[in-house]
Every structure is written in structure tokens, then in C-alpha cells.
Amino acid sequence: MNVCVLGNSHLASLILGWRQIQQEFADTKLTFYGAPGRLMEFFDVKDGNLVAGHADLRQHLQWISGSGDAIVTGDFDGYVIYALAFGIRNVLGVFAGHRGESLRADERQPVSDHCFMRAIEDVLLGSTAVSLIRRLQQITDAPILLVPQPMSSDQDRVPWTLRTLEAGEDRIAADTFSTVTTQIADRLGIQVMFQPADTLTSPMLTNSSYSRGSVRLGGGLTTTHPDDDVTHMNAEYGAIILKRVLQGGVFRDRADARPMMRTGTPGLNRLFRQAKSGLRRILSPR
Amino acid sequence: MDVEPPPHGMSPSSAMEFGYGIFSARYGNIYTARELRQLFEEACGRFSPADVIWKKNDRYYDALRPSIEPFGLASRQAVVDMRAYHLRKVLSVLRTADIFIFTLGLTEAWVHGPSGTVYPTAPGTIAGAYDAAVHKFHNFDFEEVYGDLVSFFDLAREHNPEMRFLLTVSPVPLTATASGEHVLHATMYSKSVLRAVAGRLHQQYPYVDYFPSYEIITSALSRACFFEDNLRSVRAAGVAAVMDTFFGEHAAATPDPDAAPGTENHECMAASEKEAKADEDVVCEEALLEAFSPR
Image (cartoon, rainbow over all chains, first blue to last red; front, top):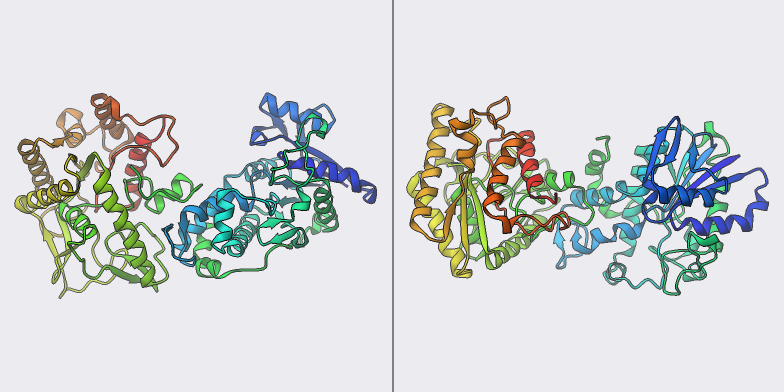
């Protein structure tokens, strides 16, 4: 089974994690393609392939894939889209300045739940992940599994994270993210695997043990992130993710790639229930 | 100024659908001078509108800006909360704006008879229910429009003595009228009153200016080339001609091309037309937004 794994700077943890566990998956070959930031948006669709349309992207793809080429073909049995600005941390800005009807009244600008959910949807649809998924779907009908960006470590002290925690909105943020992500995945015709619950210390934070020793995507994967980096995870985390991905059966049979793995926060919350009818409209094809 | 910006990361099209990024606050369209006056009097605690919560299909709407939440709100209290927040922001505009731009759109309006509250749309259209015993049609005349604007200027300068005003008149003709007159007749009356009031105020007050966007679009010299084929909606080229003329005379007001979307330091408080169909409004407002957006 040939699986293509695409990501941004977070891909480093998966590459290192794969080195730890690949002997357990002898019949599986993983090929990694990645580049930091939003470089992975610079693909052109040419002759049934994704071709790097930016010199920096080409350079990253060549050394990461190890194949010397900078072309992602449509021949893989499946594709994993990892991180690429699709994560709960990306939507915390919506919570920072505005509050839906179901959230606690405070100085934030009040908006309808419809408006609030639309904003979250827009953030996620504007991610590099979705951009790449849409391009991939032009070259292949193989299963695509979206694995959202890991939640930041429980040492995260940036204002948006702290605000969410102090407001007691971490659970609702996680549930809202989960709900909108599932809707987007359904709409795109892909599958999604949320972050395993056993890697979390709260609904929106990762156990900091998984962020220690994370490395940069570059320089032969030997340069570690600064100690205060709270967003990137290490090889141990990457191994956990890839095991779950490969054990989930998504790519085992392309014709029967149905089970949607959900291991994060549970079902629908009150916010979503109230906005449900609106979501149907919001998430219908535009 | 944009004192009620959209949620972080919301797309421009969604923002517009939810009433963001068009005006300096999330007013919705302000069509008449009376609406303008009553909004700012309400923000200053000098006016209490009546029947401000409309209902439709178990959803609740702010009757004074019913289109900003196209799906309404879940409760009456949510409408009250949102309006209270909005009024605080409106007051902040009053206190901090250097220049206030207002486009006079209409003279026709629907009024809550007992209180005099003027609505931007007829009760029963977007939401609410029409009650012939309560709701009245009113077509404002020169003295009323003039009086409303003078009262607004006085109120604004009471809070912000250095505030200056720029008036324009919407060139978009009426699609329909409730006056009983032919729509052509009604349009000419409305635009004549609004243009005459703007001219009078410009002549009378040194802190009031008039910008001839109406003339640029509607003049016979333009041969109607700035209108779409329906001879009503303004083409993007027409908006561009207006904005280029404006910024050509006010270079310092040209938007900063490096400014992030939604944070432009413009003072656009233009109102557009009540009678426009939704899609036509979007075209017009999109073009205006584009004119003010980073280039």
C-alpha cells in the first residue's frame, strides 16, 4: 500500500515517527511531501500531477520526498493531509473578538450563532489543507484523510489560548471545531481523524510531553525547535498519529473506505444544535 | 473607521452577507435622514424606538437593521444584547470621527405611528408583521429632511465639536413607490428633495460639504453609461469614476494599500437604496467595498 503524506512544518514529527514504527507496517510505503508555512498552496495541476509552482516549494519537496522530484502524482492508494493550518488554534481568533448567542456574555461583539459558525467555517475553508485537498481531487479519486493540526501544548500561553481557557470555553471551542470540521469533510467527500484523546490534557491542549524535542522541517530534521515552541510535536506523537491512521483502515480498501475515526471531543454541543439549520445552508455547496 | 469589524478570518463575501465591512458600524442600510437622526439620538439616550424586535419563523430580528443577520437570532434577548452593543459603537463613532459621510437615499419610509419610529424596511417584508392600524407610510418633504439633518449635525457636534460632514445623494432610482404616484414621478420627487436639502445645508454650514456622485452618475453628460442594462443598478465603472474623482480631490484620504482588510481608515457611512433587490444591492455595495479596499 502506497500512501502519500502531505503537510507543513508539522510534517517533521510524522517523518520521524514513521522511522520508529515502519517495521510494524511492512506492506506499507509512505511518501512524504511538505514545506513550511503556506508554500504547499503553490501547486499547479499539470498532466494529472501536482507540480510545484514555486522554487522554495520545489526545493523542500525534493529533499523531503528523497526522490529528487517535486511532483505529487495521483497514483497513490491514499493521501493524508496533515496540519496545514487546519486546526483548533486557527479558529480561536473568532472566539477572541466575537461571541455567538450561546457563549457567555462579555465585552466581545455579539453575533448570531449562524454568523459565528460561518466565520469558523471560513477560517478552515481558507486553510492550506483545504486548498491542497481541492487540488488533489483534481488528480485522484483515492481516499483522502484529513488529520488536523495538533492542538498546542498545555504550556501554550498565547493570548487567544489563554483567553479561551480563562473563559471556560475550551470545551465548546473543541466541540465547535469538531462539528465544523466534520461538516467540511462530508462536504469535500474526505475523511477526518481527530487528535487522539489520550494525547490531550484538556479539550484543546496537547500533553506537553509530546512537544518536547520537536524538530524543524528542514536541515535534515536535526534542528530542534526552541524550548518555548508549543505548537510542534515530536517523533513520539508522530508515531501515534501514523499508527492510528494506518490502523484505521481508511486506505486498506479504496472501495470500502468508510469508517470515520473520531477520537477527539464528543458530538454536538449546544451551540451547534442551535445553529444546525443554519449550518445546513452554510455548508451546502456554494 | 470600522468599529464593528467582522470575526477574525471571515471571508469578505460572508462578511458582506452579515452586514460587515460596508459602513463604519454595523448599521445596515440607513435610507432616510430620519433614520440617521433617530439612530444617533437612540445611541445618546434621547430616543427610544418602539417595536424594535421583529419575528419570523421563530427567529428574531432587529427591526432597525433587519438584514444584518439574515437568519435572525434565537431569542428576543439576543436582539436586545446586540442592539445595546451596536449603540455603544455608534456612540464611539460619534465621538471620534473627524468626517462623517452620509448618502441620502430615500424620502419614503414606513413609520410606527404611535412612536414615530422609522423603519428601514416595511414591516412584514424581511420580518415582522404589517398592522395597518399602527404602521404608516410617510414621504418626507424638504423641511423634514432638512430638520432631521440639522438636528443630527447639532447632536454630533455637541459630542464632537470639530466633526465635519460630507453629503451625497444616491443615484439609484426607486424600483417601486408607496406614494401612489408613478415611480418616475416618485423618484424625481425624492431625489429632488434630497439634492435640494444637501445643497441648502452645504450653502448654509461651513462644516458641511457636498460631493456630486449623484450628478456624476445621472447627468445627461454621462449618457446613462454608468448604469447597468436595467438602468437602475450602478456599474462598477460608475462607482470607480465616483471614487476616483473623490480621491483625486482628497489624496490624503486614499486608503492605505498596506492596511489589512476590514481595518481601512476610511469614513464611509454611505447608505444605499431601500428599494434595491438584494442581488443588486450586493453588486453596488461590493463595488463600493472594492473601491475602499487595499489596491
